[in-house]
Length: 119
Length: 326
Image (cartoon, rainbow over all chains, first blue to last red; front, side, top):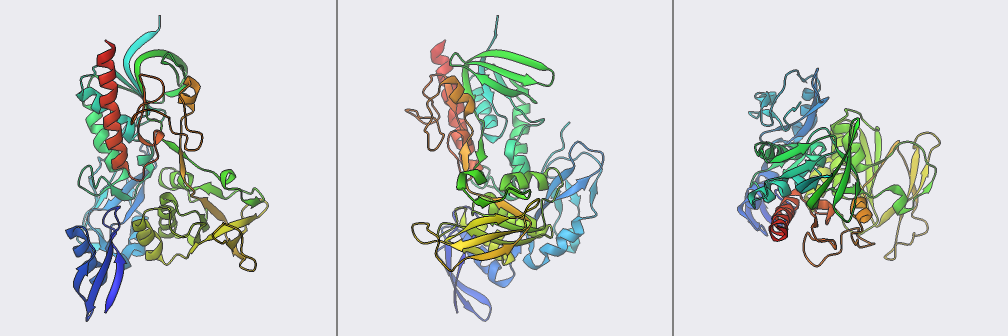
């Protein structure tokens, strides 16, 4: 089976032509870099996305702390992950990159802060 | 006597910070950065999605993370003074700047100035939509600020007008926060935003996208209740019989950005009437020697990495100008 997808790894957005056999990608063409090849395989075999959102803080100078998963998580889990974030509260100052939730949803990814809380 | 500074940079977003650091690298030792917000980072602070830094840092970062790298760097340079909550209200041809800080007004003269004031969003008024003027109509960037900084959800049933990147990114953000995005309406035949955003923000969530369509009317007295959507032909004329009504409580307008250059205009810098960019004989220069422009106030860029590259050049140019002026 042939399939055409768009690579989302960077702003170039290569059009990828895939040959798929038994739900496995056997050939990728159209990618301008190796990332496109890996993306194509993952996108067909187990699509993943980095989740970015915010969590509430308590008694800090900003109301919301922006966060993201440090690795991509299964696309199908994005909405569940949003529900998991709702009760999270950040109570002390953090730096960008600090872990907010370790092993988030047992997915072997960490939820990290993407902003430092300044004075 | 007016206090005189070597280099003043207006704006502490990615452009202003990169320009300041580059000017310092080129030998400028007296730099003042004026930022109107209470912290540095500019618009990046509300751009919580990832995709920043791929070219510049060879990493995929969220907007605030990209800003944070520059904030750390700029704060480690003692010769760069950062003045926050500083709103510039006047600029003259002689490079005298007036700015307000809470409870104070300052006037300062600069030998060179770099304007890094960013851009602003085009509005509903600029695309001529008929109908009432209820609440519930937001520019995409305003909705982004409300959701990502102020913890407010602007609405629950959303229609996005225009397919600019911020509109597409906000369609995903609204969906993740539990709102229903009824569709994206784009008058052109393809998306204005990056194709990756069409995939990861629209197709991932099965949001309908209507190309060659526009909204022709807004309904609602106090709050938006519905809009009319209609197909257009190649000359953007409405096609009879294609009109349909979409119930919604919120409209996001994402129809492009224009450089914010009122201060330069005030100083007499020549601006292109159509693009609002300064007219000049070289990159980052303006019609007034010693006034430079960089980032989205020079030209609206798709990605921040390009803003950084452009602003580094402006920093070096300003340093070169200052050396010549001595």
